[in-house]
Length: 210
Image (tube, rainbow, N blue to C red):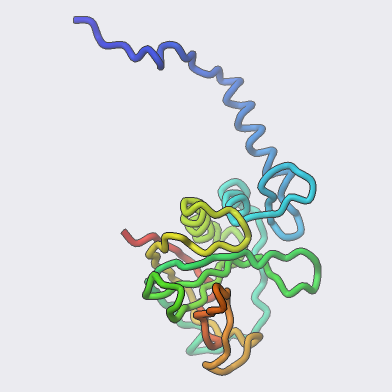
């Protein structure tokens, strides 16, 4: 009996070990040379003044385990900010808090907003994923979802919200005020769904809910 032959596969020679090593070297070199050493951000392509994006910076986490995370300098509120919580909701939007220069108030966090509804006109919970090796898995999950939705910029409002599960610590972001009435977060069509100073930060784990 003659085995059927895959003519396409047969026509393509297997790459040599040297070719694979060169591909690996070039791929790694891109992140080595295009990553900002001061903030860990990665540009999308090698063009002058090209911006960084969620996609490129999220991917570098899988290459560089030495990225430094930020130090938490605020005093922890015992009994509240030491409480670990898990929350499920639809990922509605994500953005880079991209640090460009000293004093701009940005800290390279992934700022994401989730809700129990797929509609932007709903109440949101703000979730922050810091940079650093201990948060790389969570950042990569966000990166994968955002990239699959077709966004590669600093600010992404998902066309198709995805349900996720996040695990992290309760955090009172005092920099945004101390009342439940303050509006914050991303604004779409004049609507901001996030209120108050409470959020989940840092996030330790992000899971896609099937």
